[in-house]
Structures are given as C-alpha cells and as structure tokens.
Amino acid sequence: MSYIKTTSKEKSNPIHLYYEDYGEGQPVVLVHGWPLSGAMFEYQKEAIVNAGFRCITYDRRGFGKSDQPWNGYDYDTMATDLNDLINSLSLKDVILVGFSMGGGELGRYVRNFGTAHLSKIVFLSSIAPFMLKTDDNPDGVSSETFEEFKEAIRKDRAGFMDDFGKNFVNYEDNKDKVSAKQLHFCWSIAMGALPKGTLDCIDAFGKTDLREDLKKIDIPCLFIHGDKDEVVPIAPTAKQGHKIVKNSLLKVIKGAPHGCVFTHTEEVNSILLDFFNS
Image (cartoon, rainbow, N blue to C red; front, side, top):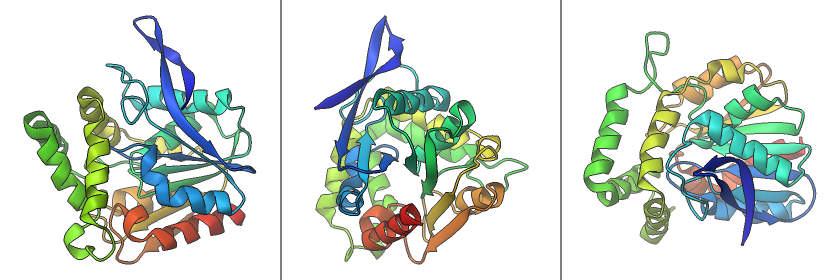
C-alpha cells in the first residue's frame, strides 16, 4: 500500500493519503467524489493505462484508506493535499480529472497553485463552479437541502447512504446498466468514511463558490455531465463553468445520471481519452 505524507498536521502528526499509481506515460490524476474513494474509478483506470497513460488515484482525507483527521474538510486544505500529492510524486504535465466533489479540489488548486504542473483539466459530473442557490445563482440547490442531508446523516447515516446511492445512478431507470451489488460496494466505501468528514464535506461542495477560481484556468478544459443528473444539476455547474472558462469544451451525455462512470462507462471513457489525446 502506498501513502504520501501531507504538509498538514493534526496533533503534531502528519496526515497520510493513500494512493494507487499504475502505468507509464503522461500522468492522469483522478479525484473522487463524495462520499466515495479512489476505488470508484475502477472502470476508468484500465482504460486510461491501456491507452498509454499513467493513472493515479488517491483517497481524500477522511475517506477510503487515507488517514481520518477531525479537521481540514475545506477546499483550501484539500487542494493543498492534492498539491502535496503532485509534489511528492514529482508529477509534471498532469491531466487532472475531478468527479463531483472532486471538481472543487481542481478549481481551488488552480486558484492557489496555478497551472504550471498541469496540462489539461476535466470536470466530470462536477459541483464546480457553484452549487448553492443564491440571488446571483438562481439555478442552484437550496441551503435547506444540504442541511437536510446533514440531519439525515446524523440520524441514520447507513440509511441515507443507501438512498443516496440509488439516486446517484437513477437506479430505477438504470437497473440494466448497474447492479445492486455495485451499489452495495459503493455503500460500503461510503460507510467506511469518517462521519465527521462526511458531514463537513457537504458544506465544502454545497456552499463553496468557485466561480472566481475557474476564471484562472488557462489550460485546455472539459466539462462532462449527464443530462439526467438528479444529484448535481447541470445548469449551475457544467453549463455555468463552460461559460466561465474561456475556450472550454462541454460534453453532455444523453440519459446519463450523476454516477455516469458506472452507467455510461464506455461513453465516459471514450470522451476522456479523446480529450487526453487531443
């Protein structure tokens, strides 16, 4: 098992992040969504490595096999964790892919650390640039919804994650594309996360405004989103991000839910690899 030591500490102890590193060639770093881990990219890793790229996944602090500190579940800290990974592995010319919540690390990384180590950036079913409904972001999600998430998790985290997993893939409409066993696997990953981190991350992905962050993207950028995403609405995220990032691309996958990596795997992989090779 491979770990990197981050620059942040808790109780004088460094925080370690678990990562997996396969293949050779230009590095592709995949940043997972909430409340999962790098294991969610099982069906992307092989395709990326077979296409001649080096594929790296890591588990966000508090999730998967990484350390579970009590604090640090804000995008400034988590983007620093990503920067620590890139520096620890001496990565250059990196293609960053952020799924759902992972898009927040990408935006904040660019804002805080620039693009000198990056080649391309992909927001996949991403929350970026801004999920929260406000007067100047009317297509967003109400703050009450995120508070309801937290209340339900505090009351019955296991039950919430079971329901959320079904909504993640629009299960009733996609039973022919994803199995109940796959949902259970994702549920088990979610249940292994630190409950405190699970709660804190809701404020990070739900209430962090990344619009100014995305304005700093000056490298090739792609937004991928399903038009049936019932978890992360496309209007305040991919469509708005596409307008903000100059010369960016937007690929909308017809019929795809939030968890398109599970239900529309071949289409997602094809779009990714076409962009990587462009």
